[in-house]
Amino acid sequence: MPSLKPLLDPIRSFQALFVVFVALVAGPLAAQPAQIIGAAEIVENRVSGEISGIRRQLAPEAEIYRSELIRTEAASSTRLRFSDRSDLRLGPSAQIRLDSAIYTGQAGTAVTLTRGALRFVSGNGPVGTYQIRTPVATIGLRGTTVDVVLRQGRAFVTLVDGAAQVCIGNRCSLLTNRCDYVEAGGGQVRPAQRLTPNVPTFNTACRGAACGGGGCTASATGTPGTPGPAAPSPGGYDPAGGSDSGGSAGGGASGGGKGR
Image 1: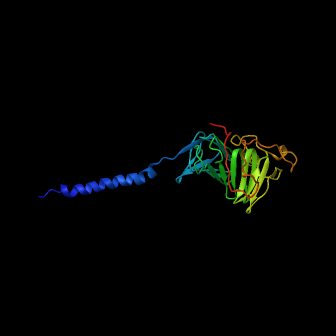
Image 2: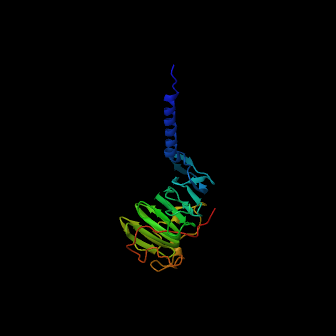
Image 3: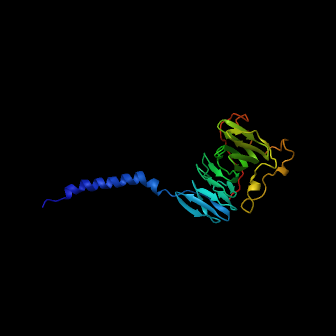
């Protein structure tokens, strides 16, 4: 009986090459582990994370991952710390995605808030890269602490420290004074104003250990309509590129977040 080896050898060689090809093409994508970007420092009541369709309940010190969707339920809140020393606090009934090149010291750092309220303290990532995206507007940060509240299709952005720019398309408003706020919605961005009692703030939306203290309240801002003290900002930085209107959307942040 003639040997089958001459016939099988080419087939086996082809199979071996095919396995190598599949491993090279699909392997890195299928086997790539989720990227750890920080941890949940404080969790009050029910807070969940979801990545790649897998949902879990967060507990204190639980690791969090790039591209993870974080949700807080009613009467719940959380404080997250990231590898670039950024600090993010979420109030009740909030939802945020930790997207882009988040908290890794790379350009393009962003979070996307789709509902609720947050306080964000930027970390030590590259200057000019931090953004908070919402369905209403984009907030560009630099050396900044900001409060963002989404309410009835509008975004209320209050500056706690640093400088920020709130944009819808090419319509932007600049925040440089502590406890000034910008309201955005309906395709419009209003000029910065002093905080007043009827403005939604993170302090009124979030209470408890995860929310922390400080921030801005209307009673702490002085007379409405009068300029507040300028918040510190890195030297030479102009978040609006020299104008408080008509600038490009987005901005950046760097600097003083607290670390784990």
